[in-house]
Image 1 (cartoon, rainbow, N blue to C red):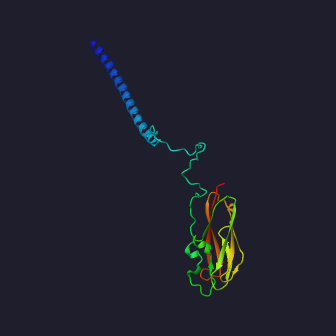
Image 2 (spheres, rainbow, N blue to C red):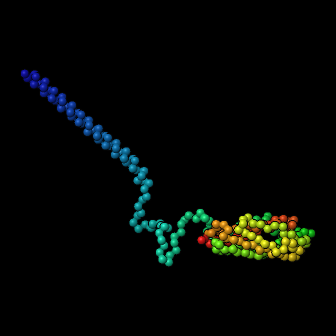
Image 3 (cartoon, rainbow, N blue to C red):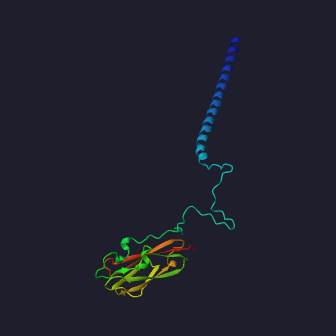
Amino acid sequence: MSQRRTQGSDNVQIRLNMRVLIWGGLVLAAIVVFGLAFTVGRLINQPAASSAPSAAAPGAASAPNSSLPAAPGQAPAQSAARPAQGIDKPSDTPVPVPLGRRPVGSEVAIGDNPRLAMPELKDSGYIYDFGEIGPQDKVEKTFIIRNEGTKPLEIKDVKSICGCTSSLVSNKTVPPGGETSLKIQFDAGFERIAGLRVTREVKVASNDPARPEISFHIAAYIRPQ
């Protein structure tokens, strides 16, 4: 009788030990899974946290927001980026005409030839600047072409690089020592150039053998619309 009771007690104890082992294993597995999930979560969230903008320290100055309206009497904030339409007004000085495109004048021996000269543009590098004009303005300037040679000077052609510039020569044949006038008109409304500093080349072809074709530049700043 006592032997049967001992065997029954052993069976109960074995069942209890198995339950303890099973529950212990489950608890341990849950702890391991939780620890892995916590670690993975920290690794995933760490780059996002480092890329987020840091909050400004108390008292630190913040950058001005150019999108905010300016206070009355205050100039609006300027954006750091240049407008795609063009360059700013101040002193974008037009590029002088290359030496190889300028009138020769008396620097080369004239001999028995005509010689085209434009003395009023010599000191400026053969540039005439109209200054600041409106986006629809038409401006003009009359230049003097002088023949410093010993033979008649023939003005064969005057042309520009765009249709915004037109020209008119008063006399195409200039005697030795004589002069003729060249009127140049610039139409700012011909192109979409509001807000730009522009330079246009004018070419003059003649029978001057020292330089059969010379160039000079006209320039202007066109106010924005």
